[in-house]
Length: 125
Length: 125
DNA sequence: AATGTTGGTAACCTAGAGTTAACCAATAGC
DNA sequence: GCTATTGGTTAACTCTAGGTTACCAACATT
Image (tube, rainbow over all chains, first blue to last red; front, side):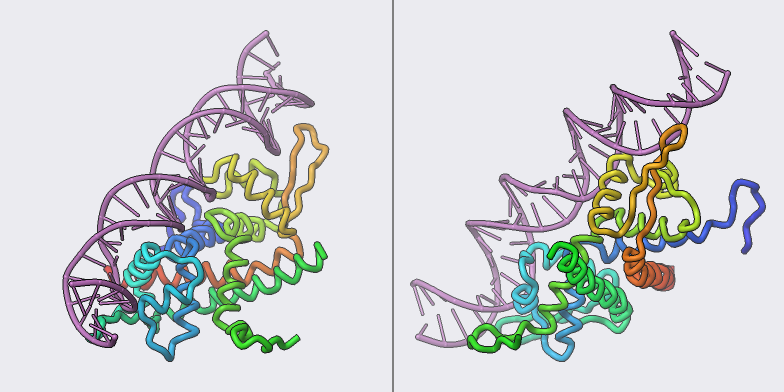
């Protein structure tokens, strides 16, 4: 599997590999809402998270975007969508076991957010 | 500092706090290029990273975006910009010590990218 | 004088992210 | 019959991140 035959096809540098992996991640998790949705579902794992509840819980998201982002997350196996047969039909969304792999990402990211907010306060205040 | 006086101003829930911190992070680090630039500068910490070199190292980025993103990162104290007085003037960029705090983020994110790529391969292949 | 390199800047354009508002069927309560 | 709630869908629109192209000064090489 080691392919250093052609002189100009070096084994991809660590840097290039990392940039590629990063690119992959951003394609699936990038944008304004996906990580927020995953954080929301993680925080309320013990409860039934139906569409309206999630919409109310995540500040500023529109129905259109919420639908779209939930579909994307489902496609990528990060959440499940289950239609309940209740009086007014409800649909519950949950983070999958596989989706929990994203938690280290959201955690480091939100921790950095806290640190950075402090830094800015100190620098400007 | 505990503010549970008004009945409808509950102490902000853990969930809301996390969503807010996440939002902060995404404002500074979000988008297509910033994390890539930080990863690039981290990988080549030992070398002189001038504008042209970075542009060549990060696939697909345009001069316009590179300038803009470098400025943003500088504003947020994550990188430094130093003009060298060399024959054709060069400008070198480096990650700051503070900027290194972002590395856990890029690392978890790019690791997830590797994991996810495998997952997709298994699922589809 | 022409050409190439450095690190940009300015103008224009587009795709897609995202918003708003109206609307839908199904079921329930008044 | 009217209204509300559920989980959406659709059209029409705005807005901005990002891409493309052309251009700039300064200096070096030919």
